[in-house]
Image 1 (cartoon, one colour):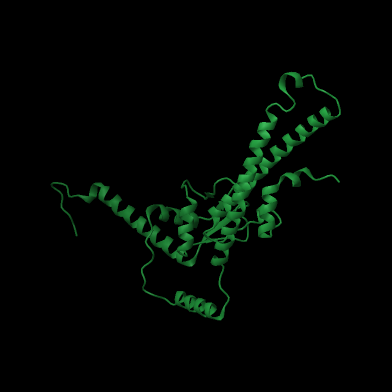
Image 2: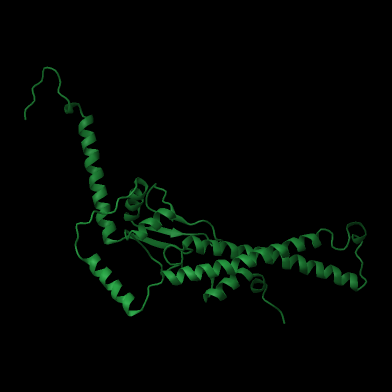
Length: 256
C-alpha cells in the first residue's frame, strides 16, 4: 500500500493535531496569554516535520543503495566512497535529533493543555455566581482611576484604536507580529498587557496564523480619548509658549 509522502513526513504537525483535536495547524487558536506557548509548539512541530522529511529521504536513498548491493549490482563509486559514505552518519544525527524534538513536543503540548484548561472559565455554580458579581461590579460606575499606562502602551492603544490592527504569525511558526495603521511598532507583549487590563479585545475566532483582529473595549476607547485629549492640550500649551506673543515685549502694553 502506497503512503502519502506529505502525511508520512508530517510527524510533528500530526502529533499536535491529534493531541489537541484540531484538523490542521491553522485551527490552533490559543486563549489569551498563551500565544507565545502556541508559537513554540508550532515551531517545534514544523522542525520535527523538516527533520523527519530529510531523514526519510536519506533512509530511502540508503535503502536503495543497499538493495542494489544485495542484488549484486555494485556501483563503481562504492570502491572509493563506500556504500553509504557520509549518509550513514547523517542518518544517525537526524534520527537522534528527531528523537530529541519528539521528547520536547509532547511536554510542550501537555503544559499548554494544562494552562489552557486553567484559563478556561469555570462553570460551577459558585464560579458562575462570582463571575456575575464581577460583571455587575464592572457595569457599576465607579470613581476608580483609570489604569496608568507607559508611553509605549499609550501609543499602542492609540494605534489599535485607528482600526485594522492584527496579531499574526507566519505559517512556519515565525515570531508573533502586530500590524496597524501607523508607523508605530507594537510588541505582542504590549498587546498582552492591554488585553489583560481589559482595554483591548483579541478576536480569537480566527487563528493568529490567519491574523487576529485587535480592537478597543469601551474602557479602552474612553482611556484612548482621555490620552488623546490630554496630549492635544499639552501640544496646544507648548505651541502657545513657543509663540512670540507668549512673552511681553519691551515697550508694549498687555490688555487683560
